[in-house]
Amino acid sequence: MNFDLQKCRLYGILDLGYVRPEDGARVAREMLDGGVEILQLRAKNLPRAEISLLALPLARLCREFGVPFILNDHPDLVAETGADGVHVGQDDMPVADARRLAGAGKLVGLSTHSPTQAVAAMQQEPDYIGFGPLFSTPTKPDYVPTGLQDVAEVHRTAKRPVFCIGGIKRENLDVVLEAGATKVVIVSGILQAPDIRAYCRECRALLG
Image 1 (tube, one colour):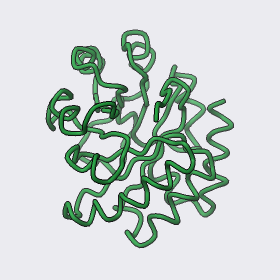
Image 2: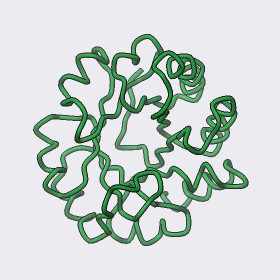
Image 3: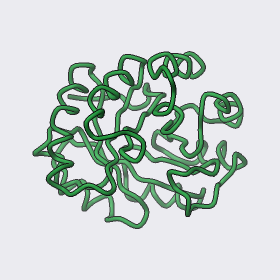
């Protein structure tokens, strides 16, 4: 399936640091019902075999919605789970290695944490980059927030879709967009919302 990432604005991460594995499918469906346009599974502390079992039904669910399903790390699991791609960090393997392991036609995203890294990332030719964390976030407690001052510059210089990430919530989405962002990743804001569907819909409405 071909995906136009330029049209995707709301990227949701199903982070099992916030969601119990047994609730993953239900929460994912609520996210997709609410308008999440890319869904990533982040399961940092689970063994490979458990990640594979969790990812299989999520891949089918995303296919039902026509939304790309991304694995955090584990490009070697992309083919066997039916995922559409993988996301890797600055300290993980190069994009070329992730692409080779994930297989032909699969998406590869790359995290960046500064304008310099964002420019350098273009040489690796990822399908998209994440940029942040913009704000402090318990999801990445060891990362120093980048703030908003570089958002516009990164969008000017990057030649790929840019998804801003890190501490972004419905409450601060306005200022993130004013800083020049057009696409965002939201994690805890979505996963801790009393009504996930409604929260996602509100974010989508702001994103346009």
